[in-house]
Amino acid sequence: MQAMNPFEQFRLLHPGWRDALEVAVVSFVLYRVLLVFQRTRAVQMFTGIVVLIVVYAVAWVLKLAMLTYLLGLVFTYGAFALLIVFQPELRAALAQLGRSPMSALFHRMGDSEVAEQVADAVERLSRSGIGAIIAVEREIPLDDYVHSGTTMQAKVSADLLATIFTPYSPLHDGAVIIRDDTLIGAGAILPLSQATLDDRSLGTRHRAALGLSEETDALVVVVSEESSSIALASHGRLYRNLEPAQLRELLAGRVVLDDSSDAIARR
Image (cartoon, rainbow, N blue to C red; front, top):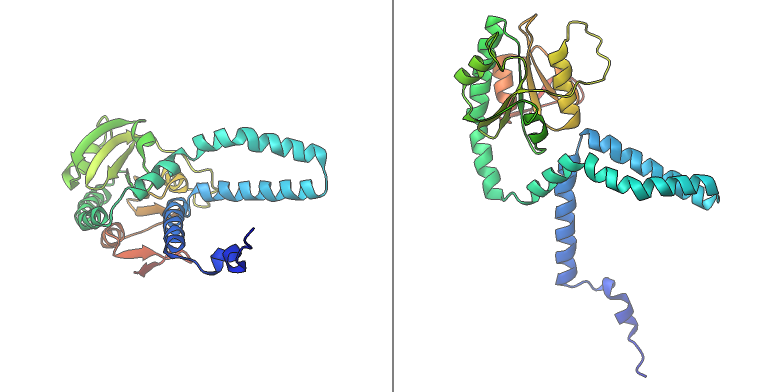
């Protein structure tokens, strides 16, 4: 029997182009998935899963039979629950993979016009002392929240947004949801944040904006009915007392919010 060449046993020491291609594809997929999960509530849940895995490993090493058995049940039946819990993020990840660089380019080109219309409407509403909440969808789809209100298909315009939030109109009490340059829902019900708010002046709209920003990566604009101030919720943080010009720059992606403070840092 012919002896195997020792180098054939260590093929990974001499990777070929196929190996490089596989690594590149897997890295790209993981990168796009992590972009979707980044800084959403799903990250916290994923951290909890990692902790359970570590506890299970320790219990297995120490031969803690009862703990190992219970955690084994959790992992067995928890997989089905995870598919439901992470449904929005999984859909967003698949949507991310399906987006070509060219489609992303066209999407970015439309951001400035949408930002202009939203900022114009918010400025009008703020001057009139009319409360409003506007959610701008990003990577994670907001379809579940759209279905809680009235589904629409209309091009975003300042006039339409101002009309929707006019007091006593049928849809003024919920949130408006925007996808790309289209208003896809109004009167939507958003999840309320359970975070402790030190400022008593922050009401239901601010809690709803924070709640959605904790669940998704959406940008949520709030106009306070009491103070007429403009705020923006993003990734579980609320940035208050924004000027319309600042809001316009943020929505257009020309500036980014600094995580270390409530200041705005230019990209």
